[in-house]
Image (cartoon, rainbow, N blue to C red; front, side):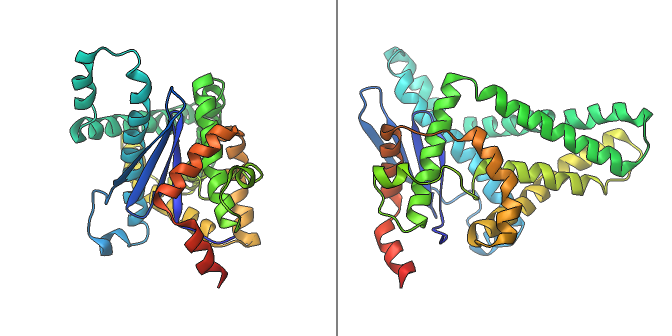
Amino acid sequence: MRYSGIGGQAVMEGVMMKNQEKYAIAVRKPDHEIEIKVEQYQGAVKNRRLRNIPILRGVFSFIESLYLGMSTLMYSASFFEEEEAPEENKKEKKEKSDAVWMGGTVAVSLLIAFALFFALPYFLSGFFQKITDSEIVLALLEGVIRLAIFIGYIAVISMMPEIRRVFMYHGAEHKCINCIEHGLELNVENVRKSSKQHKRCGTSFLLIVMLVSIVFFMFIRVDSKILRLVLRLLLIPVIAGVSYEFIRLAGRYDNWFFNLLSQPGLWMQRMTTKEPDDEMIEVGIASVEAVFDWKSWQKEVSL
C-alpha cells in the first residue's frame, strides 16, 4: 500500500476530503443530488518551516482539524436546515459560520473534551488512593478509566441513527482512500470491496492520545492536585503532537511493527465506521475526485 497523502472526514450526509491545502465537501442533498464545494485552507500558521517541525506540526494539525471539521459539519447540516428554516433565519445562520463564532465553538469543544476525558478520569482515579499510593499504579488506573469513558462514549453515540449514518459515510471515506492506495480504479464496485479501516483515521489518533497520555502522566510528580490537573492540560498539545507523529509514520510504512501497533486503532474503527450504501460511496468518490488526481498519482507510484 502506498501513502497518498489525502485525508478526510465524514460529515452530515457527506464526506470531506483534504489534499494538502485544498479540501472538498460532497453532500447528498435532500433531493438526492450531490453538492460539491471546493475551498483552500492554509491553516492558522502560514510559516512552512514552523509547520514542518516534528511534534509541533501535530499540534497545528489537531487544532486545524477541529476547526475545519466543525466548519464542514455546519456546512453539510445547512442543507437540511434550509428545508425548515424561514427566510429571515438565513442571515443568522450565516453569522454563526464566521471565524469568531467558529473559534469559540472549537474552544468550548476542547474544554468539554478535557473535562470528560482528562479531568473526570483524574478525579475518579483519586478514589483508589485509599488502596495504593503508587503514582505509577494510579496513573495506569486513570488511563484505564479514560479508555473506558472513551469507548463507552463511542458505544453510546453509535446507537443514535444520525450518528450511525455519519459512521457509514466515515466508512465510505476510508474505502475510497483504501481503493486508491491499493492501485484500484476509483469506482463504486472497487470501493465497495475495499476495507473500511485505515491506519490514518482520526479514531486511531484519539486512541493513541489516550494511550500516550498514560505514559506522560506517570511523570507528573507534584503534591498539589490542582497543579497536577493544570500540568495535564498543558501536556495535551505535546501528547497530541507525539500521537500525530505515530499516526503519520503508521500511514507511511506497511510493516509488521507499525501494523501491530496500529491494531488497537483499527479495532476501535469497527465501532466508528459502518458499511456504506452505494449512494454514500458515490458521495465519497465525488469528494476525492474534486481535490485529488488519483489516476496520475497511481501512474507515478507504479513507475
